Image (cartoon, rainbow, N blue to C red):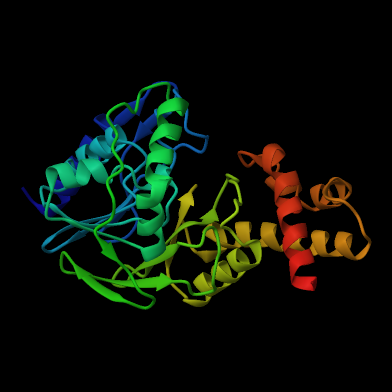
Amino acid sequence: MNKLTLLFTLAFSSITHAWTIDGLGDYQFDQLSANSYIMHGPLGEPNVANQGFMNNPGMIIGADGVIVIDPGGTYQIGLEVIKEIKKITDKPIVAAFNTHVHGDHWLGNQAILEQYPNAKIYAHPAMIAQAKDGEGDLWVGVMDRSTEGLSKGTIATYPTDATTNQQIIQAGGETFKIHNDVTGVAHTDNDIMIEHVGGKTLFLGDNDLVDRFGRFDGTSDMHGNIKALEYAINLGLTHYVPGHGPSGDADAAVMPFLEYLKIIKEEATKGYEEDLADYEIKPFADKRLAEYRDWHGYDAQLGKHIGKMLLEIEALDL
């Protein structure tokens, strides 16, 4: 079989035998660069319809094995991710990365270590500590309730290796550079961004979102998130993979969320100076955010984002 025929066969197989979620569509790994692939998940919250699948699992095929980024939020999703990998390569999974502690990104670890017990799974040391200290079990419960039991059997399976900032990791014949704590707290206090050096690709986790908004919880810092996105752009890479939403270059996949956060910051700052409450600031921000109104979660999150930014501005002022 020549190379062209092989590529056609793989592409045709991927299209005709993709993981199908009724009512939502087909999900398979789309090629991003020569040896990296992304499965772009649905944009909603975890629920029965999407079976808890909502993130962007990634994989890189190295000479000596496969490396996975964020294998999904349940044991069942992890199994489906592995099935899709096996449609493209028969190489074993030798390593994985978890971008942060939110379980929709990493509870699929269970399926990886079940089938590939020697695989290393890397994460921020604070992510590992928090997951073991209750966040893992909390997220198992969240996914079970959200999917009405479709994730039954999922067990919090923790990363095996802690990362450090600027660490170079060799896995499967590929080189990765870890960006830990580059700007302090961002989406969480345990984010890592993973640079696939050969593919000139950055996996940002939920520091970056496209076509979807999420929460900024108590461990987040919106000012830090802005700095993290600016840092990512300054790396000058070719491909950027958000935690949710479509991948692309910096203009397509990073700038939209960065501009959104900057607008929230600007309007909250003006409101703080004028002693306005968050609900009074919201109409001014909304006027400037027309292009974001069709992003999933806009109505639910806009007011909360303004409130969070206002609290951060007040704390910085004090």
